[in-house]
Figure 1 (tube, one colour):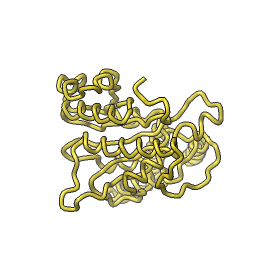
Figure 2: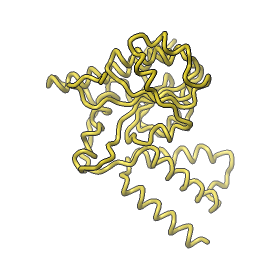
Figure 3: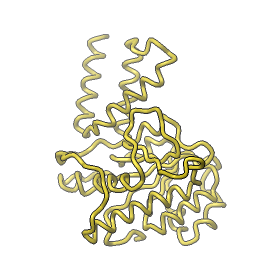
Amino acid sequence: MMASRNLPTTPVVILARPQMGENIGATARAMMNCALSDLRIVKPRDGWPNPGALPMAAGGSEIIENANVFESLADATHDVSFMVAASARRRDLPIKSVNPRVAASMLLAHGPDSSASKLGKQKVLRTAMLFGPEASGLNNDEVVLADVLVTAPLNPAYPSLNLAQAVLLMAWEWRMAAHLTETSEPVPSAPQPNMPDVQHASIQERDFFFQRLETALDEGGFFNAPHMATTVKRNIRALFTRAMPSAQEISTLHGVIQALTRQRK
C-alpha cells in the first residue's frame, strides 16, 4: 500500500471537472508526496484515461492507474461523510470557512475511526478533499455539498493556485496534522463539539434527500419567486449540512417528506 502504516486512514482526493490531463498527473504526484492514494475524478473534460496524465505523475503513476471516474459529485462521495472544498475565493454562502491548517485537523477529527468502526458497521465512511476545475474552480452547487470551505490566506493580489499546488497544500497540511497526532505533539485545531458515536450520512445520501426535499417543496409551491429559487435551495442544503445528520436522521427526514406529501395528495 502507498499510505504510511503509521498514519490514520487517508482522505479521498476528488477532482471535479478537471480539464488537463497534465494537471491530473501532477495532482497524483503531489498526493504521492504526502502518502494519499485514493483519487476520484468527476466528469473530466478530455475523458479518461488521459495520455497527458502519466508522464506528469512521475512516482504517482499507480495513483493514476487506480483512479476512479464518476459522472457526478454525489456518486463520487458515496462513502464520504465529511468533505472540505478548496476555493481561492470566499462565497456568499452560509457555510463555515477555515484555513487549510484548521481544515486538516477537522479531517482528522472526522476520520473513519470516529464513528463506523466503533459501532461495528460494515460500511466505513471516509473524509474527502474537493477541488474544482482549473479555469473557474468549484461552482456554488458543488461547494454547498461540502461541510467546510477552505480558503488559504495567500497574497490577496493573487491568491489563485494551480490544481496540483492546491492539492499539495491541503495534502501537506493533512500529513503534518496526522504526523503531529502520531508523535503526541500539539495540533492546531478548531474546537470540536462532543458528538455521539453515530453513523453519519454519506454526502451521496444527503444529496438524494436534498433532491427529494426540493422536489416536494417545488410541487407544493414553496419556490414562488423563480429568481430566488437557486439561492434558497443552496441555503436549505447548507442548513442541513451544518447539522451533520446521521444516516438514521436522514431516513427519518425521508419519512417526514413521505407523510407530508401523502397528506397533501
